[in-house]
Image (cartoon, rainbow, N blue to C red; front, side):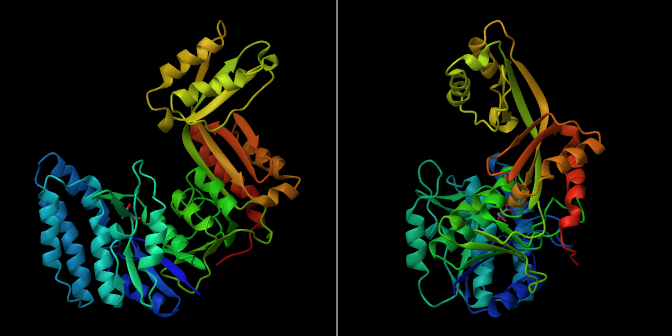
Length: 439
Ligand code: ASP
C-alpha cells in the first residue's frame, strides 16, 4: 500500500499542526510521501506566508523596501522551528534566499514559492524524512504544461524505502523556478501520487468537501463519496476543496483521492473514486459562478442554414475565447462565455458575429451566473428537474437558461448574478431530505 499525503497551509500553520501531521503520518506506514504547503492562517496569524511573499515580490519589483513582509515570513519559520526544537540553520537559508531575491534573476514564481521550500525543509527534519526539492522533480514545458518527464523523475527519485518530503506549488522551467497557480500544492500532490502509482492520494486540510459551499449553505452535508466525473463538473464552476487541476493527474493514473481533515484524522472524510454505489442522495453537489456573458443571435431561417453554428464558433476560436454553453431555439443561438476569458474582446466578437447575421442585431447580456447541479442519481429520479424548478420558483428566481448533459448527471441553470447564491440555497433546501444525518 502506498499513500501520498498533501498537507495544506492550515495543516502546516504552526508547531501544533506539525505535530498533528507527524502523528497522522506515523500512524500508517504506507504514508511515506508527503507534500507540504507553506504555513497558512491560524488564530495568531491572519495572513498566509505566501501572501507575505507576494508582498515581498510586489515591493521588490518596484525597488521598494521588502524587509517588512520578509520579516513576517522568517518569523513564522523561526517560531515553528523553535517550538519543535529543530536545529536547522534557518538564518543561512534565509540569507541565501534574500540574496536571490535581491539578484536580477529573481522572479515572482521564485519568491512566492519559498514558503513551501522552507516548510519542506522544516518538515523533513522534524519527521526525519528525506527532503527532495520540487525543482528536481516537477518540470514545466515551454508552454507552461507539466512535462511528462516529471512522472519518470519522481518515480526514479522517490523509489527507496525512506519517507520523502516534497514542497508543493512549484517546479522548474528551464533554469528558473516556476510556480503553479495559487493553491497549487494540490496539483503537486496529485502529480506525485500519479507518478508513484499510489493507491491513494490523501489531501489533508481543515475544510471538508461539502455538497454546497458552506459560505452559502452553512450546514451543507459532507460528501462521503463522489466520482471523478461528478467532482469535475463541480470543479468546473469553481466548487472544490481541491484545486481543479489536481484531479486529472491522479485520475488518469488510477489513483483515488481522499479529502481528510488534519484536525479530525479519524473521520472518513470524502473519497473521490471512479465509480460509486448510488446512495440515497440524488444530488452529489451544487456549485455556481457569476460573471458570464451571453451573445444572442436571432435570424429568420437560421436553423435551415448548414454551417451557421460552425461560423459562429469560428469567431470565438479565432479570437481565442473559450465557449462555455450554447443554448439554441429554432431561429436563435446564444453563446455563453466567461468574462475572464472574454477580457476586452467584446467589441471584436460583436463585430464578427454581426457580419454573420447582417440586418439582425446581435445582443449581449451581461450579469449571468451559472449554477450546476450534479449527481448521477438524477438520471433515475423523475422529479429532479421539477424539484430544481420548484425551488427556484418558490424564491422568485427566474431561469435565464437551462441545459442538461446527455448522461442526465448534470443540470446547469443560468440565473441573474444577484440571485445565484439564493438559487444554490433554494436547490439545496429541496434536496436536503436525501442526505443522511451527520454530526
Ligand atoms: N502556498 C500557496 C498558496 O497559498 C500554494 C498552496 O498552498 O497550495 O496559494
